Length: 356
Image 1 (cartoon, rainbow, N blue to C red):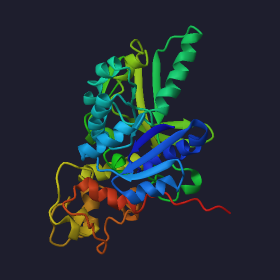
Image 2 (cartoon, rainbow, N blue to C red; image 1 turned 90 degrees about the vertical axis):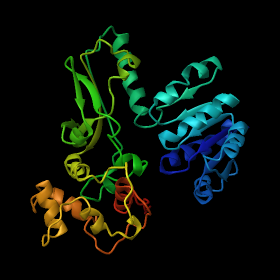
Image 3 (cartoon, rainbow, N blue to C red; image 1 turned 180 degrees about the vertical axis):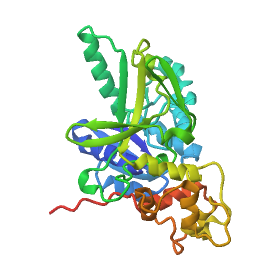
Image 4 (cartoon, rainbow, N blue to C red; image 1 turned 90 degrees about the horizontal axis):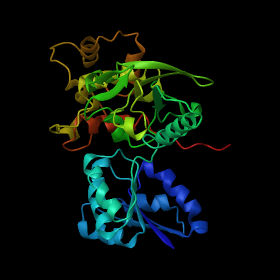
């Protein structure tokens, strides 16, 4: 049996686990599903005979190394900043490693040693990044094979809900890690080159610099710049291309409404809020608004963000329960981003499909 260790059994790991279990008999695979929650790990194994659920604290070095030592290949589905210790253990014990995350500088620094030891450290192999890379290279290679030259390159990707599950005003639900959705676009300006000119969009402007896309048979979408497109010029073989732009797709109207949350400060993950566990959603929203002796939270927000009462953005904010004076945050010392994630998770969770 070939042993695969999957660390992290969250939302993003579900399809991977299901796929590998489906191949496990024919391919002689034994999966160890490791998560901080043993209950969650058990749930994802679905009592499959080739799956072993375990409880694993990634910060417990001894336990982590014991499990990595047993494996032939390690798949880390942890948050991106947690990959590096796993990667170092994989180097120590000469184990191959796969992640779906963007390559960090710390991970890139391990490249030389991994190659010297004959190891494969495959990153950016999820949906975005991942499938977008493969589909892009397929098109680029096909053009080069017929003698063509790439002058302009634009690529768009995004996890969107199917029409039958599109049941809220935002036209969006969580199809991957909710935390990553809340923090999307942070960590530096979006970078790309357009018609030979370098462009940089800071986070606070990102969701107002969108463009429209028409997809035949599917309708109209909007897109915003996705991180650093420039680092893929050489990887894609596009050093001479005048335009290299990677974008994230959403349904029209999402970005304008999301920008309200960004401008308020609700996506900030850099500080904790005192007594957050006792705070109501309404009190949380009021944190980011100026004091006024008589105006309501609703009026203050509309004035601060210049939102008309008949604007669809206002209906979207109402749909999120941001002004609910009964529901409590219940998370101790939470950051604004953590609180927003909780609020959104109650509204943007995909429901199980009902078979008829």
